[in-house]
Length: 202
Ligand SMILES: [Zn+2]
Figure (cartoon, rainbow, N blue to C red):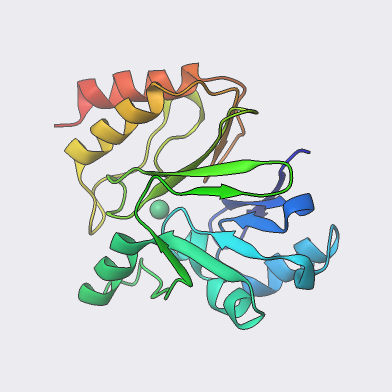
């Protein structure tokens, strides 16, 4: 099984489809685009869960249409609470079907997804880790080549991001599936991001 990557409008956020499991990781910013993309691989009716790494519009704007189609949205509780208290055009007001807090383990037929709370880019950012295949879906927390998420948006926090990157750098990662740009092949990308963030963020 290989996750299918969709690069979604309007600003090229990655959404991933785990077809065999009926799972999406992030949904992107354009519902019509996403639904059409999914239909090339499977039927939307076959999908059960959409995990949202965070609720910025470019990753989560298509979520409400999926929810209305019966797909369960999984998101961190803090992300939900932050968007309720702070009106920001960056955040989509998602009301998750399953609010997670980190540490939850979702078992599917072939894969397992562990929820890791990784605040910093947003208060309720999560990463998803598949421990056997060593996949890390990292949202906007960490990118390939040592990139990491911005902390200057509402709800961002540099110290939290550094702590989150430290936590992720301790994982064994074989494939990094970030929220933007390239999929990467090993865990060195995460370690590099931690080192760079430590040296330039205060
Ligand atoms: Zn973001």
